Length: 227
Image (tube, rainbow, N blue to C red; front, side, top):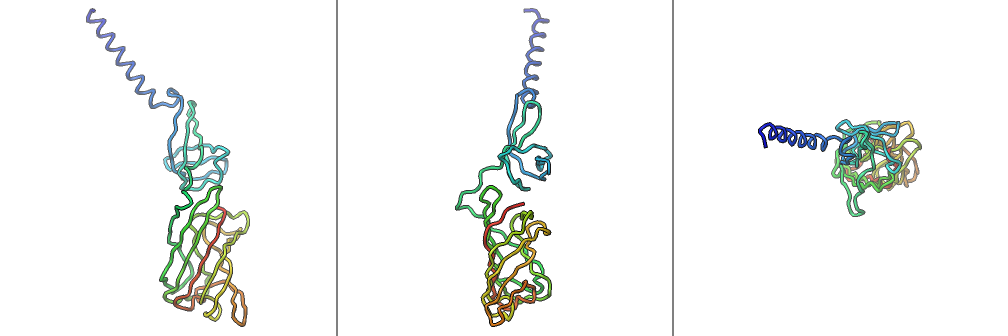
């Protein structure tokens, strides 16, 4: 074989290897691909944008997307991305704890301020919030408590609430609701409405000044639809 033929063959081999290398990184050549991604924003047109900037159209099976979802993406040979759906939800025994933010409690401090929650699929969240008062509260603002995720506001939603030594006259057991208004936003309650079992049997929205007893408790529990 002449030296010129050897050079030509080596050049052809190098070009072939480079073609394979470039093609392996190009969807239009390799025919498609899949990967995991995290949702950064949710569009109103059926798309999501990932935290690394990929815009993908949701498949019908991927309903109620939420910022932070870990999802499966697929790309067609045309370069168009689709969001197939979120990863499998945790098993029933898997719960996530969080520390709920409490607003308008004034001077109140907490012996316990905790919650646990689980996303059950189809946009539903089970949650329990438990607050135990240490130092008493103050102020006339409505006490508000954050949920672990944003709450759907197309209709009013409520969670069951149980209170002890919180509310009118302090020493009583009360039952009520944590309420989310259609005019509200995010995952914060708009009011905590409690009823007293004392002689007055009054209903009221809990304010910072109603956190009147060290050792008083508020428990909020139930499920809600996510935004």
